[in-house]
Image (cartoon, rainbow, N blue to C red):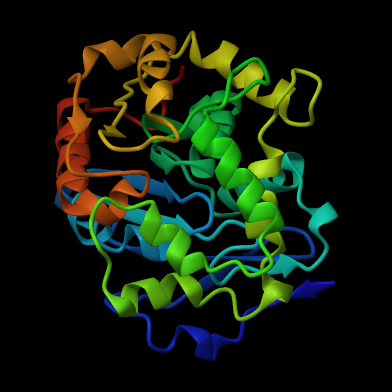
Length: 306
């Protein structure tokens, strides 16, 4: 069964006055917000900002106004998250489903000359899409993410998190997000992360994300991510890897990702200090300015190719 989150759940969300729009991705509607203009500051830029588990587009609220000064900013909610539709049945959630939904979303909006800004599962899905449709993407900004092809070793912290998310009798999404931040969050912000999850009926997507990470090369999704790794090893467009100093879940992915993408070493070798897994919360404004600087020093055209 497909369910939609009641609109009134989002009435008290702070500092996020963007009207949701929707794209049909099969039997589900994928929600997104956008701001800015492709012609902002004389450029022709589109920023596609992808969140991860278990957040939604609200995560990018501190970055959106700064990015919007440089171009169009498009921020979707992955299926099962935010204002997007969701399945009640956990078995409906697969890597293929999430990937196909994102691919359809990008194709329906005809996004091109995209600077991909992605974190957590937004990176797994977004980097895979960029690898397969390089003609749409001008730059990559992977943050606290990776491309697990089943050969990687996950940290004990990750395994504990995955077990808890899948099996906890009561799952408090607000607490999960706050625990993944370096800074303390205000009560209204924590409640904003709880907003898309009125009760257990709406949590199947959040419950399943960790279990979708391939643990073996034979697992579903492993081939998609392995193929993306192979393609990104030949990537010729700009890439800027931005990881947080205090993320125990993905920090080990940072240097291998910089080494995988050939152009990543051409950009500054930096860590985002005083930031943890949800670095958009901890350092959103600083990160957005770094991304704008990155765009300004790597001019591109939508016709460029990988």
